Length: 367
Image 1 (cartoon, rainbow, N blue to C red):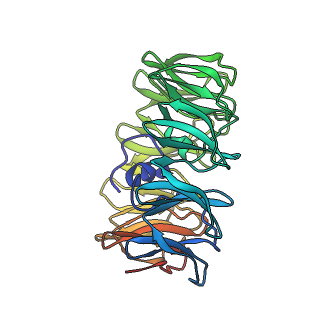
Image 2 (image 1 turned 45 degrees about the horizontal axis):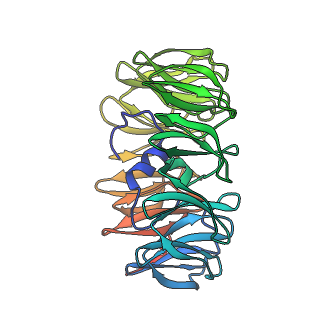
C-alpha cells in the first residue's frame, strides 16, 4: 500500500490493485463453503477443513447465495455449494449472479444468461466493472454498445440510450454520466437532472456525492445543490457521517455540515470506519485515531489500512498482518499482501501464492 493520491476508498483501491489474480473473492464467503487451495488448484471446505469440493479449479470467485464461479481449463462456469455443476466452464469472463442473471463474455462480446444458461441478451461491447460484482443496481445495468455507454434492463432492453462517454451504476435514484468532457447526473428514466458541469462525479451515498469542478472538490445533494462548497484539493466519500478531505497536501476530516472535526494535519489518511481512521503524520509515523484525534493504536508500522469486521491491515517491515482495536495482531504479520476481511475471511499472499485466512489466522491452504 502506498500513499493515496486518488480519491477512492481503501476498498476500491484494493480491488484495483488485486484485480485478476488467482482467486477472485468478490462477494460473501460462507463459513460452510470456504475456498481451499492445494498447490495451484482450488476447491472448497467447511470450517473444520473437511473437503466439500476437491481442489481442481484454476480460479474461483463471484459468490452468490447458492452458487459460485469457477475456472477450469481456461474457462469460467458455475457450481452449486454442493459442488454440482450448474453451468459448464465455457466463458472467458463472468459476473456474479444477481436476480437470476449473470453477465458472461465469450467470442469477443458480453451478454446475459439465466440460471438455465440461456442467452437473454448479447452483442454488448462491455459491462461496467462494478457490475461484475453487483450486476443490477436499481433495476438497471450499465453497458457499452457501439462505443458509447448507457443502461439496459435485466431482460436486455436498452432503456437509457447508449450515448455517454462513460457512466456509473445508479445509486439513490441518480447515476453519474459523462457527456463530452463533463459529468452530470441522470434519473432512471434518462432525464438529465443535474447539468453536466463537473470534471468528476461520484456515486450518491446517504444523500451526498463528491464532485470535482475547476480542480476543487466538494459535495452536492440529489438536487445538485452545493452542500459543501468545492474548496478541497481532494476528497473521499462520507463514511459514518465523516469525510476525509485534503487541503494544501494535508488530510483532515469534516462532518456533513462541512465543519472540521479534525483539521488537515496529516500527510496521508483514510476514511473513518468502525470509529477509527488510519493516518500518517508529517514525520511519517502511522497512527490509528478516533474522532477526538486520540491515537488508540500506534507503533512502528510501515503502512496500514481501514478497519473492517474489527480488524485492520498493518505492515511491519516487509510483511502484513491484521490488528484488532486493542492494537494487537489478531492475525500474525507474515504475509506479502492482504485484502480486508469480508464475512470473517480475508485473502492473503504468502511466498507468491494466495490463500484464505479467518479472523483467528487459520490458513485454508496447503502447498
